[in-house]
Amino acid sequence: MIIRSHKRIDKFDVSEDKENLIFHHAQEISPILQKNYEERMDDNNGFVDSREFRKIASIPILDWARLEKKYPGFLQDPKLLKKVLMKEADGNYRTVRKGI
Image (cartoon, rainbow, N blue to C red; front, side, top):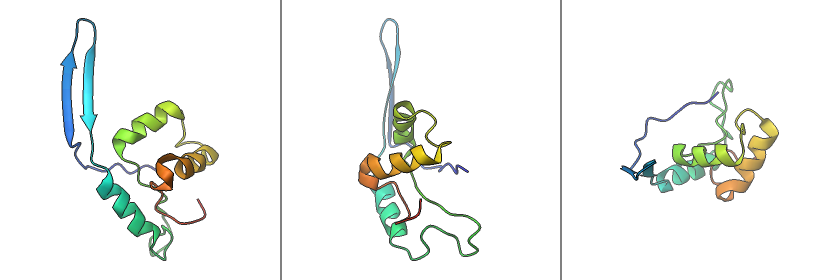
């Protein structure tokens, strides 16, 4: 299950040349990484109190687009997802310490 955040993109601009429409966008990800760290240190290891749901990562939407291009379908493949979460951003997108 993917739950999308409604956080805004910090900077967004559009330009064009003769043949292309070019989108420029930027997002401050340090608050996301800080929250991920805090959740990683939580004793629940990503589980809600009822243990019916587990949050394993929080990936900034702009970086998700880059990761999807680099690792097509990574959200649907558990083994590839684990590889991406351990490798990209030095593992800082994970919200759990173990057992992905």
